[in-house]
Length: 241
Image 1 (cartoon, rainbow, N blue to C red):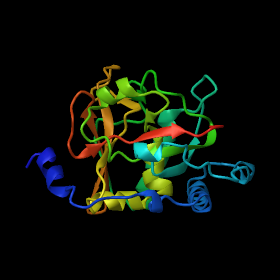
Image 2: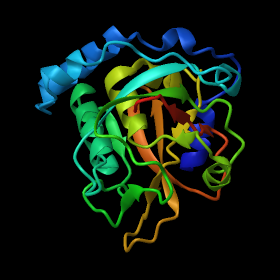
Image 3: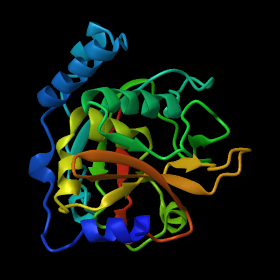
Image 4: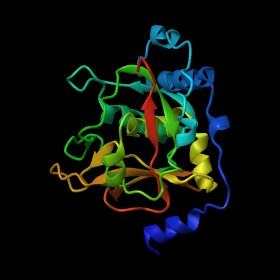
């Protein structure tokens, strides 16, 4: 059985999904970040946690665009221009997921976070801030009929998920992975990353995250091809991020 047929058998659109009530409060998200920081030794300081006092609410009109709430993210490292290293920020979260899920993670051989010629933040994507930042989220249900390349041409103040996808699913909102297993939400294509499956800076794929039988999987898909089982999550940075 081909991987595409196997994935198709896992997912159906039979049940409507409303995700707003499943977005955790700021206090709950900070608790999850504190736990991850302690277990992984990331050295996020107490002062950084203390500064997170109020979670911005959704902007007017974004609910009609499929946005369901606001989540907290963290930019690790430095890209050399004063912004965070988006690949490192994704890798650290994925490493945490591997530990937290007791190895119940599958990773495609073509995704290597340690090779800059294999994965990058796509050209034109907004740089990610260093430290904590927040963003309003659309988890992908409204964008299942587009290719990643088609979506990228339509982006304005909204952009695709990059490191946010890994942090959302492995740190703050792990229950969304369970919703994938239960076939209540589509799998996710991370449109703000580029992947070169064979290296040499030949970028034409994007990461794809799926979950089945409690196994969280990381694969890739061509940016010019539509994958019916995958939505494309988007986000809008909150003021001050």
